Image 1 (cartoon, helix red, strand yellow):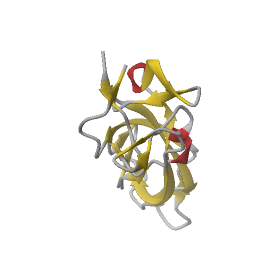
Image 2 (cartoon, one colour):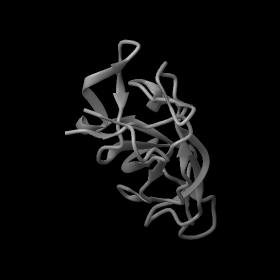
Image 3 (cartoon, helix red, strand yellow):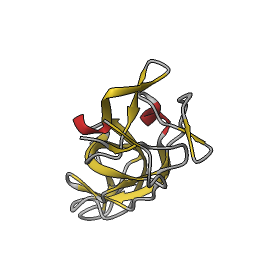
Image 4 (cartoon, one colour):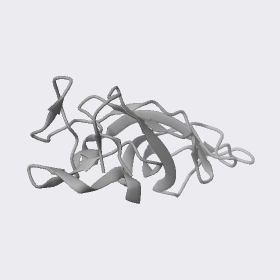
Length: 144
């Protein structure tokens, strides 16, 4: 089934729930590198999802109420987010599709307040998995 082709500058919208972590998400933008153009913008092709990186996002967990900081990225596309029959320059086109797998990588761990005097306890989890979707400005060009 045909779906809308993603274009340079389209948004990746992340859901705030990343397992035990709640992230103050911000949208990311994808950079298209395909040779095909639509509405004057390059189409996104397989591999362009790696261009999405949103640093500086705050997060907390139920145990770690002192916010930490990390970076949002796309870990893997859903099966319906790459074209099956259409390609540009030999690479499969990226489609709006369903939900991708997102990753939140911790740079500064959130902290748990100490039970008494002493230092706060850092979150030991280096990354969390979540989900997100694409929002495209493209309303006409589809691929399957």
